[in-house]
Each structure stands twice: as C-alpha cells, then as structure tokens.
Image: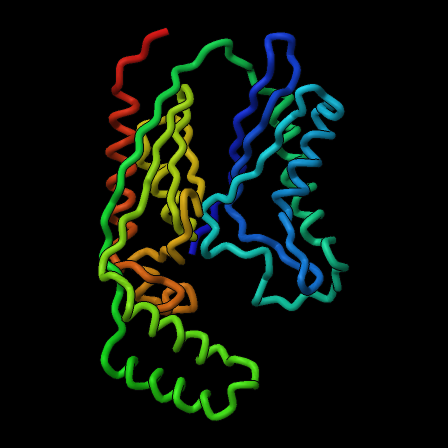
Amino acid sequence: GPTDPEISFVSVQSLEDRPIALLANYSLHYVGGVRSGDVSADYFGYFAKFIENKLGATDQTPPFVGILSNGTSGDVNNINFQKKSTRKYQRYEKMQEVAEKVASRVFEAHQQIEFQDWVPLAAKQTNLTLKTRQPAPDMIDHFAKVTADSEDDPNRRQSREEIYADRIAKIQRAPEEVSIQLQALRIGDLGISAIPFETFAETGLELKDRSPFPDTFTIELANGSFGYLPTPRQHRLGGYETWLGTSYVEKEATTKIVASLLEMFQSLQQGKVSR
C-alpha cells in the first residue's frame, strides 16, 4: 500500500518567543529493539528529548513539552522485509536513529514557520457504532479443537494458533456492536482527526485529500485501541492485519469512519469564528 512521507507539527511559543510545546505527527510503526521486560516510549520518547534540545528549550520553567503522535501507520513498518539488512543494531539504537531523523526534519522546517498571535480553535466529537466481525462455524470448530489439544500440555508455550483461539472465544462472548469515539479538531487552517484504531496509511491520505482544510493529519490509537483498521481493498488482499482477532470490526468500517470525520471537518470549517 501507499505510505505517507509527511511529518506534520504544531508549535506553540510565548509572546517572548519561549518555546512552550510542539506536537508532531509521523506515520510509522514503533521501532522496537528493547531488552525483554523493558517498557519503552520508543522513538516517540526520543523525539521529545531531541526536539527539546534542538529548539534550545532545556531547563525551562515551566518545562517545554515535546510530543510525537502516531500517524496512520497500521501498515507502515521501519523494516524492509524484501531486503535483509546486513547491519545489526544495538538495543535502542534504531529508535534513536529514527527519532533523530524525524526531529532534524522538524527542526529544519521550524526555522521557516511564521507564528500567529491568534488562530480559530474548534473541536467536535461523535460516537460511531460499528458491527463486529464474527467467526464462521468452521473457524469456531477449528479453534475449539486447537484449544482442546492445547489442554493436554498446559505448561508448554502458547502457539500463535492458540493465541488466536483465545481471541476467537472472546469475540464469541463479546457484543456484536461496538461504539467508538471519533474526534475532529481545528487549529486555524489545520484539521486533525483522531481515530481509535491502528489505521492504514491510505485512510490518512484519503482524509488529507478530501479534507476542507489546507493541511490535515490523523492521530491513530486515539481515545482507545480497537485493533487494526484495514480498508475494504486491504481486506480483499488479506494478510496479518486483516485476520479476525487482529481486526475486529466490519470490513466497511473505514468508509463509515472517513465519512463521519469529513462531516465534522466540514462543520468546523464552516462554523462561525469570533475573536
């Protein structure tokens, strides 16, 4: 599928030009490469440190806040699976490399931006009901047998098939509909959408293309995590992100989500603006 090469960011500073905060957005999956048992903010955390240093915003009171949000990266990884890398990275090294590149590009662009002393702000949110996908009878029978076979040796490590057997069992016990929260924000001529899924890049690109705002970006995994969100086309192609147990909602979910967000964007764009 397509990738989104843009890095978007919003920068806020005081009237005395003191950096207050910067929110960036990049459509790339987390990098990984940590020690077993570690909890890591990945390259998002390193970006926050790097951009603070590059903007000369260290040791401030109140402190500078740097943030990198996850764009539409449900199908965009930092690993080239078609070409085996000959380089072996140390723990945390690759995420620092990615963060440095992203922070450097943001800092370069930051030198050219023109700050505004006022912009219109607006926000909308809605709850959208989606149907959940249900397992077919043959899938239920297959995973029931997998579960029965695994009970013969409860001490061995779970296989991937057993993991999905457990997920299918939970889907059968879960409601057949789910209510998700969607948000649309306006900051001047910028539109920001928020989706509680691991969203595919083509969905983010479609929102950018159809948005009434000159600039738009999407924050994924916002206000919740409901699994992967493949497009109908990607569902036809298949693959890990489309498996039931990885993806949980109806195959037309992206169509409904995009339509809802665009409707909110239109309302924000046409709304009355007052100082």
